Image: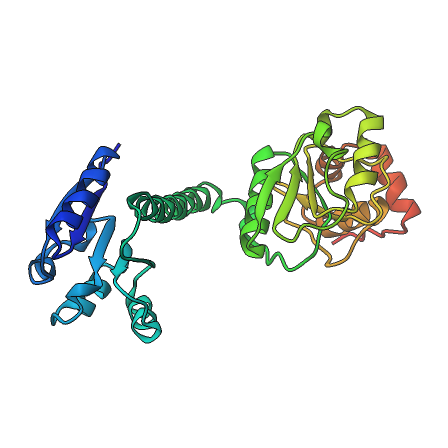
Length: 303
């Protein structure tokens, strides 16, 4: 693991050495400067933490240093509180301050807390970059995601189910929480504005389990994914979305019943694909497809 470096700028030698000793024991590599002059030439990318004394504020480089290291965790040590001064330093990039004299553990706690936050932010950026790269070619990347939950999504490839959940959460600035059948009964029955629940193994459930999940989850911000067309289920209250590798994404902008969903699939693809392919993707026989077309009064004219 990469050793984190801390820059300590303090003209009180004993205090600077005490801070360095404590941080060294925690695995940090420390550099001590008694003025801001030499800090101007340092590489700001080298230091993850900067502990800066307000005693150096009269030096020409004081605010330049704060701005230079604004991407680091900057903790300001002050001898007295001055609201205008503190506000200005935070505008330049200071994360927090501590009032002298202080307990060393209080300073360490501030440093480790901000470093933990920074690590989480960096990790999130890397994960988002990775997930975007993984899913960028999937058809779900093209959606606007301006519709509300709950959603029932069907895709032959589980990856499309996952990418749909990922992009929906990203566009809505929410977190995805994977759930199992065991979780359903313990989930809160009110909408959580920060979380989207995602169940991806619907096709593996027993018929009774499917019905129970559909009935309970419709009250939640939930995405239910299946690799099979659930023609026998009543999905009232759900937006139904179909994503296939060779059938264009279909979303009518409204909640559909199963029969309306099938109708949209047939109308949208009957001149693009043979009936045998459409029936295979719907999970029904070609004869059943003909019967549904007749009952729905879908005319297929010769072109």
